Length: 385
Image (cartoon, rainbow, N blue to C red; front, top):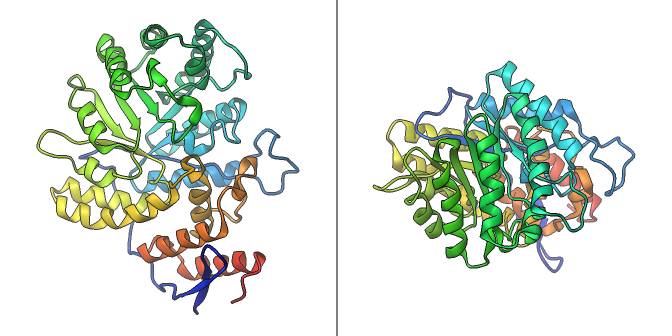
């Protein structure tokens, strides 16, 4: 059937949904790149909660989605921004998510890395020492779970730090403590405005120098860096300055095909929120790289960039709404409800365009189910079909 999809201003346009999905199957772990999908959480739609309540999580559906990602050879980056850390999921919920997902990874033989932050701290003035203690508490939880640690950027540290030396001190202490090499995460202010000036300066060149100083002091404790600045040129320049053996994991949801493909001087691995909805397709693309087929990799992944740029458009931090929306359409969960009520963070025209782009890529395993759910959503919003 033809769907009438709304655009800005109330006008609708006809769209003919596809009838067959892109043919993708599960496969062995990837070999040429290390690829993590930052995974979303599935809310419990029957919980009687408000946006200010602790997150009510549907654990069965949440863990099933992680098994889906592992089945395609992807790693899972757990309790990250995509899981709504600081936007609906508090530290208590994140700690339970880490423990459950790490145990599931052990049973499934899946790769997992988990976010370590400071979001258990209540808002207010904090000292750098208090921030360090909060990091230590979360690092202990992740290490005890058996997962790799990702040291996330901290709003509290950004507020408490007087300059680069505070970052060098806090991160140096944490790296000395870490039992295994960690991933350092630089999340730009487009994802979280409270992180403006991270690493002690709003000058990105100066901030980059401090970031590299942290790594240079402890290269044996840094597995890699995850860079989410949406600036491909800066990422390439940064990865060329990394010590030998330290990976660059792209977090650039605008330019990931070219960054993962790389050039004659290197490439980026991946830790991406967009690989939540793109998981099977992304894995198939990287398998082409595994065989040396760079052109095939780009042919499969380049067409996905339009969808990614749409989901991550300003305000970028609300991309999670589109990610969960597509998971619902794809049949990975039975509802379009999010922790913190974040399903309301994007407009109907935005969601309609996300459906159109994802359907065009063949991302929905059951296109008829996605079409039916999209039709119901349009009906609820008063869009006649």
